[in-house]
Amino acid sequence: MLETERRLKGESGEAATALAELVLALSPR
Image (cartoon, rainbow, N blue to C red; front, side):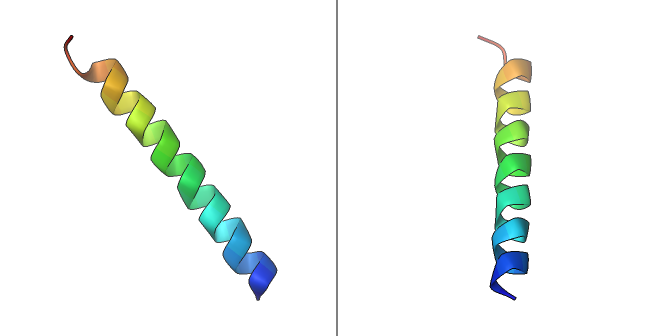
């Protein structure tokens, strides 16, 4: 159970980081 939760949090964290990088890349500066 704990391993699954940790894995899900890790995957969601990676997805959030990738999304943030994408937003920064697309945002005009």
